[in-house]
Image (tube, helix red, strand yellow):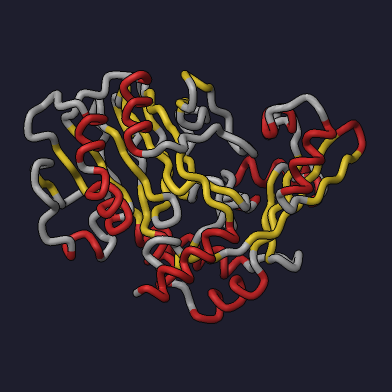
Length: 342
């Protein structure tokens, strides 16, 4: 967080943050208490450009006191604020399009990931608002997914690019999300219809348990910048990414095909331990962080920047919203056009 500038002026020296090592770019209100939604409406092209170039932008010292002000900020950022669909983590909807951040226990670390990169229809942005910072810990680490991709061995990139990533999920109440919560319906036929339209195979197994399987690309091209980026949940959903005691316990109790989450290469073959280690090392090397302050708003360019959560103490409350849906096919088409123009 090394770029600080008066929001009345254009960002200075963009090369300072274009290398991706200074996440997030910081915009601090010249007059504390400035209305952020109003300022964004007046400076939308600047915000959009900064978000893509830097990968994430932190707005500080503006007047954002809670969910109503946060929703106004989202409306200023986009006319396409999204509902949270095809869910993989527990959240509570606070108001229309505004959710709590992932409701995992405070002592657990949430790994770096790009929001909903396991789907074929993801948000271009995920935005956070700090209502109450933790008394200890609770940072939201960030990592530049462009640099993660650049750090990988060519043979690793080639294999993932050729095969993609296969995600296998079992929706087991008490262990993972139920299918009713994940798909926000009680109707199995609605689940089947959604999955058919999204390229997800559906299998109903003993006891009414749902198992899904989907194969997605591991690498995408940003539709605006034309940059290639590591954009997937290959590590996040791999069974070995759970704490050792949890991973071991699940594998002892369940057959591999019944695990709540697991990932493979797109042809169904296992991802090698050494490859998982390589991916984790690349994420670790690119991880940066900052300490939340009350009223902070963080705009994350989802295809460019991965985010995480550190364990914390105290009554931490971070709100989240997503915007600007994009489908895989339209993203790649837009990226081709951007590259042709460049």
